[in-house]
Length: 431
Ligand code: ACO
Image (cartoon, rainbow, N blue to C red):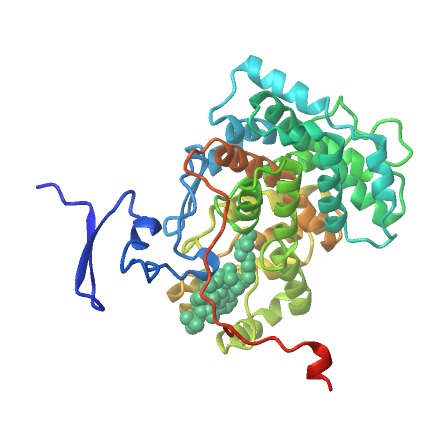
């Protein structure tokens, strides 16, 4: 017998019964809105701060099974992509929904490579920032500013125009990110080198000085490639939701993405790896780990880089990053904090407190160590996240623009303030 895919709800205020359809494990909020609705009363609504149990969209971009530790882009396991693909191929996959043919790939890489330069006036915009401006603030402002350079971008229903902005954004993000880094150091901005790959060129724009040509160590550019693949998308997280929400007003993609960058800027989203690094520095040596763990168990501390809202198993990205960490340290020399991190992980994975709460290392546990080894100051960590996430934001934005079910984002509220007060003009109130 096939099960009926409905939910029967009895409203005990009235005794009325409602049958709500269940589709893909969800009921429709609009069906809930019919419960108790009358000419005098609005129907029932759902209260869900932080959208912890509300699906805002149908999406075919990224699949996560947090209990099993599975992450797939367009159906492909993250482990296989990190092992054998490149960031630009993954970006193509996210945006187009399928892997490129050789011709499509070559055209895509060519187009991205030849859009890495930004208008010289953007340089003027960036130069206007204070000498100690946070690079993430510079990035979000300069991406927003790009919308004024490409006013045609507002034609979001035109597939060709959309494609041009997607190429521009993926191409120019490393340039803007690298320049925001150089700005804080008082160093000249380095122009893109189109002979290099995406990550090699990024390293060149970050670190090139007086040499004719910057030649990054292939192990470092490969590690960065892997990190970029791991951070390319993560379904409906805070910044993606910001891009979708702002994009639902049909604004141009530069403006929608600058909202995503702003969301990522926040310490609860993009900033955890910096907190891990601070924690490791505070613990200092392997010998201090047991005392620190006791502090965590007593509730005095939090083991940063452990635990995740979605993953209740090993974050699949953490496993891959751990391997990349070893590769980077082969080039840069081992950071003594690695030993502290490994000891923390070893003890925590065996300890009842962490096991029973399903707390495993997340993507941020090792990434800060890699970034530090690559000589990035902590302020750059979120910029390094925003560059690859651009591909995911754009894939999600495209999906939104083409989705006939989507409307302008406009949540409800439960009003808790005063009503119908009589206004007394200031002159009378103060006399
Ligand atoms: N260290 C110690 N205890 C923890 C930790 C941790 N890192 N994370 C969760 N717990 C404990 C909580 O105290 C709670 O214990 P209790 O049941 O005895 O009260 C239990 O585990 C459940 O934790 P919640 O806070 O309810 O889990 P939630 O899903 O809300 O939080 C979060 C997830 C915010 C990621 C949390 O695990 C945390 O703060 N981790 C450290 C910060 C971090 O690494 N953030 C990066 C996340 S990855 C990313 O954003 C890219």
